[in-house]
Length: 452
Image (cartoon, rainbow, N blue to C red; front, side, top):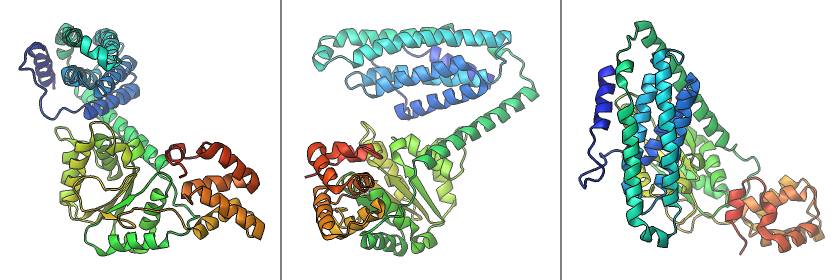
C-alpha cells in the first residue's frame, strides 16, 4: 500500500505541464464519478472524525459541480477535477492509518488544511469564470485560460509540498491494519443503510384510492407477465398518475409470480448513472470491490444470477434531462437490456422511451391520458368524504373537475381542499389563482402541469 501511494504521488508530481497541447484526461474519468467519490470520502471522514478532510472533500465536490456546469471551459478544467479527486482519495487512505493526535496525524491534518485553503481560492476563481455572461466570456477567453492554468499549477504545488516520507515510513502493525479494515466495513455498512433509507423515504406507498385505470394496469401486467423480457414505458405529463400506475402494475399477482425481485428506483434522488448503479448495488446487497468499477460488480452479478428481475426507474426525466448525461444514461440502459432476465419500467414525462430500446408504450403512442369524468368523481368523493351526489352539488363538481382536466394529481389535491371548503369557493379560487392553489404535496408535479 505504501509503495502504491508513493507511486500515485509521484505520478501526480511528474504530470506534464498543463500548457502542453498533449495533456489529456485518461479514459474512464467522469465528473459524476468524481462527485460520488468525493462524497464517499466526506462520509468516511465524518465517521472517522477527520473533520478537516470532510470539509476539504466537500469543497472539492463544489469545484467539480462548478466544472460540470461549465460550457466553454469545461475541458480545460477536467485536469483540475481529476487531480483534486485522486489526491483527496489518497489522503483519505492515509488518514485511516494514523491517529489524529500523533505527530504524523498532526502533520497530515496540517497538509489537509493547507490544501483546503488553496481549494477555496480555486473555487472562487472558477466560479468567477462560470458566472460570466457569454459576451464577457469571449472577451476574457485568454485571461480565463491563464487563470485555469494558474489554478492547476497551484494544485500541483500543494501536491508537491506534501511530504510523504514521514507518513510512508510509519510502521503499521497488524492490529492497526485489522482495525482499519473493520472501520471501513462498518462505515460502508452505515453508508449503505443511509442510502437504502433515502430510497425507501422517496418510494411512495401504493395508493389505495385508485379508479379508472384498470385497463392500463391489466395491459401493463399482462405485458410483463407473458413476454420473456419487457421494457414498459409509462409516458405522460406531470401529475397524470404514472408512478401510481407503475406501483399498481407491480402489485399484480401475475407480475409478482414471474419476478423474484422487484426494485423501485426513485430517480429524482438518483440524477446520473453512478448514482443509479450505486442504488442498484445497495438494493442487491452488493459491496464495491477494490480494483473493479461499480458497473463491473453489477455486470458480474447479473451474469451469475439468471432469476427474473424487474427495475422501476421512476421520474426518469431527472436523469434523462440532466445536462451532459443523456449519452451515459442511454448506454447504461442498453447494457442492462442485454441481460434477458432483466425487465424495466420507466415513468417519464415525454412522448418516447429513452435510448434505442423497443419500449412498449402503456396506453399506446399517445401515452397516459386524463381520467374519465366518472373516475375523477370517484377519486374526489373518496378523498373528500362528503356527499357530492346531490344534483346541484354533482353539477358543480363536474364543472370543477372539467376545469382541472381530470388530471389525477390535481383532482387529488383539490379533493383535499374540499374537505374544509365548499365547491363554490374552490371554483372561484381556481378561476382566480389556477394551479398556484394546488402547491401542496408534490409541488414540482403540480407546477409542471397547467390547465388548458
